[in-house]
View (tube, rainbow, N blue to C red):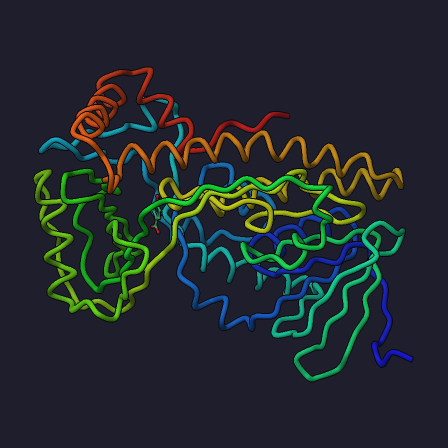
Length: 397
Ligand code: PHB
């Protein structure tokens, strides 16, 4: 006899980050009940630093579904970015080119807003669980087993199981090898990311390319800034003094005419670069969403936006599946989501390879890259392609 306490729900969601929580929020609004669980505590998730740029559609999703009005109050609207290279800087004017903007609003805040909304609405979200396992994916009642934060064991049977459990997804691995394809790309560099207590150095984000390597000057608030510079993936962030970090950043943006406002560095970490997709995004009654199904390198900040775009489509298709009782909507979800995923894979790869210094680049490669940056910034067509992708491709009805 198992000591697991059996229970039943319509949709069990493994992973209560932004993707898992937004999905359960949308399902609740459609009258579908769910349970979401996460091995991390709420505090652990709140303390994870991630990207900070929301596409217009992502902002609308938060506002339209009643998750947040804080995104307008505490976020900052950005109507463009600076692409700095060749000793100068070139603005990509999102509003002028595609009539759209992005919102600077950190992923951590999106998570807090969603966790608050689920709590307010009485959603069943269990943080800090352990021993998670899933199974019977091809049956009518797949299960997730877990030990809750108080040590009690549970078995939850569901009509559908969702793996929204991040880039080290456990659910993803449950799909048999002959039922999935995996696509990978590694990059020979990483980002050294810092938070610093300083005023902004520029009104908008600066993506800076130079022979010294790539740097991205982002922001958080009037008094807190987020910055990154390209580094070796094996770099130890603790081995760097504040002075050395500032000197590296100043050299990189100085090459293009910028000077940064410095302050105390309050956080530092190295972020690996990977592109990954698992296809299809469903198997039996299991579906994957967000980082569990795909990872993009951070250049262009597509990760969270893609996850939110996934669950918007997934909520629609799960609603159909619940109403009709069949599995065809899960295949439709996978097909619809992957269309956007591969566009975002291309965009993230393109921004990454256009802007970073490649360790084995020949002199030809370096000059070609400068030609590419000039082609994009000097052409309305080139800039429009970038602006449309950066602000998020319009959704199809
Ligand atoms: C960030 O603010 O963390 C950020 C912004 C833009 C990116 C990546 C990260 O492309």
